[in-house]
Each structure stands twice: as structure tokens, then as C-alpha cells.
Length: 127
Image (cartoon, rainbow, N blue to C red; front, side, top):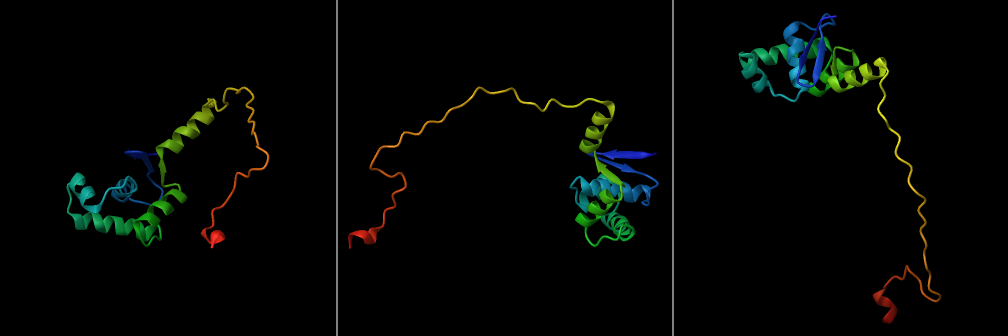
């Protein structure tokens, strides 16, 4: 399966988006604006806007966050951190999650007779 990587995101080709649409979707997922994407790709901002709009149409999204959510839901893009965790589990390595045992802790409360800890001051008590 062909894939491209941008920042912390991995996108899979042949899943419904064209190469440029997938590339720009990954850049949107990385938090880049349309102008930043255009500058990096060497294109006009309108060209980027049209490609993102095309990807939104294909994934039935009405805004950019929904585009990213639908792309993740459909398995078109995935964060690399999740892929790293999956690979770790598949290989058989598990992180050590157990904490070292602590000694027993005792908390002792000394109450003095005739006093309360939760006294409330009410100014109308003295009127």
C-alpha cells in the first residue's frame, strides 16, 4: 500500500483522494493554513483552496475539522503516534506500566474534644 508522510501524519493513496488532495489534507491535519500550504507547494492559494474543497466534497465534509475527522474515520490518514503504538503491540513489545510498590502510608487525625474543624463564620450571629 502506497503512503505519504507529512509531519506527524501518514496518508494512504488509492483510498479515494488524489495525490495532491491527500497531500493537502495531511497539511491541514498538521495545522497549516491555506496560504502556508500554497507557499510550501509553490502554488496559488486558490489552487490549494480548490483541492481542499475537492477533498471535502469527496469525504462529505462541510469544514476542515470535519474533513480530518472523516479522513481518519475512513482510514485515509492516521497519526504516526497511533501507528507507532500499533507496531509496538504487533511486534510484542509492551511498555512497562507497573509502578513500584509503595510502603503503607498511615494518616492519623488527632481531634481535640470540644472543637469543630468546620466552623462557619456568620456575621449575622452577633446582631
